[in-house]
Amino acid sequence: MASVPTIYYFDVKARAEPLKVALAGKGIAYKLENISLEAVKNLEEYPFGQAPRYKDESVDLVQTNAILRHIGRKYNMYGQGLEQQADIDVLLEGIQDFIPKIYQALVVNKDESSKADFWANHGDPSSKQSKTAGAHFAYLDAYIRRSQGSYAVGDSFTIADAALFSFLHNVIQPTFGDKLAASYPDLQAHSKRIAELPVLKSYLESG
Image (cartoon, rainbow, N blue to C red; front, side, top):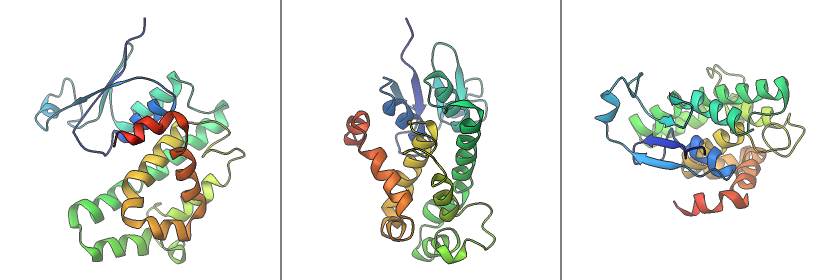
């Protein structure tokens, strides 16, 4: 009998969210173990000195996207065929390009000027041709519109949906929700569609 997978992370909504959304979106039960900053100093359990960590009957992994890809392969959330898998990988890397930018604006600086600069450089449609280091909502918006199905890639829920939803729902919409809806209705519609999946209802209601 397969064991219930365990996610080890701090008591905050951050880098573990895509993992939780992916598992919840597929109806997979999991355990969440809250850890302290001291825990990640154990380099045998946290080889890169950071969380999340994920453990099931076959792996003990760190690094968010490595874990997410494992979940995708194991639970059939990694697309149909090599082309869709490549599109999923592109989206995961596209989202990853945002992380240092948004971290600087919302966590390090926190001030309104930094938030305004972030949107001007990475959200305002007029800046999409500027030097963005690959991070612009126009790019994500255009990429998901390439899908032939109703999800980010294809016609079924994948780890790309989990990653994109977690990023928009937990990180972007609380601060830039109105601007996102006005400038990128397809991204907004994707987030709404994923939030309305019945299987995710209990996860979202848990806060």
